[in-house]
Length: 255
Length: 79
Image (cartoon, rainbow over all chains, first blue to last red; front, top):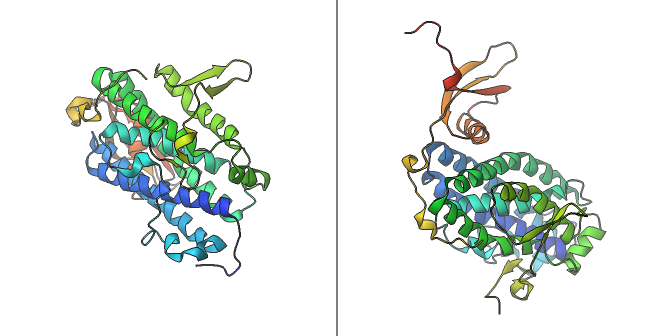
């Protein structure tokens, strides 16, 4: 329900759309594995996480109605009628295996949580309120993703190789989701206090979360530790040439 | 990441992932009641066991929940 006073902020509107679409798409992919996980306990956890992700999406979509950008096409602010897809291309298709579930849980969902953490004290209060609830629920999701990454990696052979494949397929697109550091929209959100970090800082915070696990398991990814700053940094240029800054996803193949 | 495989190679059955550690789950709903056993979960990882216990036994707003590895239970009087 719109409040009557519209907010004019295209950057925030686009980012909220992407957050909501990613949460909705994650829930849809998780749901399939609620009855296909490798263990009964994992299936129940998958069902619970599906509910959480759907809940996150459903608290985000209504925010879009408060933006003047929604007036262009009101059908795009309702998940039932929305046709735009601002979720990662990785989520366009069904997961090929449990390792895709684990990779999404560990890499993508953690990236989205990193964003919510940067919005805990947002100058846009509806986002800060939702961020705190999301972060609380995501703590359990991270433990699940972390536990399963360790478990699959330590099993070795085909299971570990399958995990590596899933992580590799999601890696670049997840790091790109934060946007290039000079992206005007993200810089505006940072300067207006809607987020407390720039895209590069968000990426750095994100790598600080996931790299201890990947490093300990000797799962090689294209990042290196900077001894001076004690941070992890990508070692290769991200595929910005095929990244769409509106839909925040990779489109096409690297030339 | 130089290793490669199709994700369909991954085992899908419980046997393939051989979870073998059973954790007894205890919880209570009120401060004036003791912890009592509400069930068990199977997981080889304590952190995963905690996630499973929380998601499976979510029918009440527990004020406390603990898990205990079954193998640490000492029988005093055998049945």
